[in-house]
Picture 1: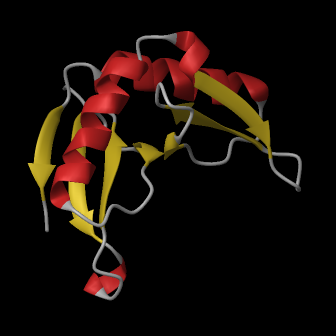
Picture 2 (picture 1 turned 180 degrees about the vertical axis):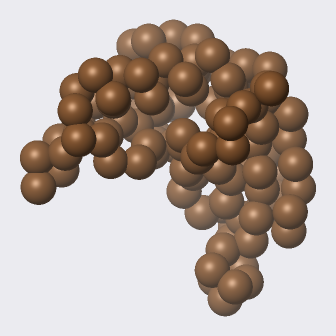
Length: 113
């Protein structure tokens, strides 16, 4: 089963921003976006993830205060366009990055707003 980008409106619609998540074929969320003030910005963010996920230099591994790792993916302008969940191990984080690379490029877009 292929991955998919799911677009939603933030937290019960209170902030009015659009967000997307990238889900793997098994339905697990592997990447979450920032909030976008327009639907055009949100779909542009998805296209940016599709493109930049194919370039490993666009991924940045980070460590949280509690020692868990996560990654972000950045656009050409250096802006963060997506952030992963927290991982207990470095290998889990690497697997997450690989999953984004594998799933993003051909993922369908589902609008759940």
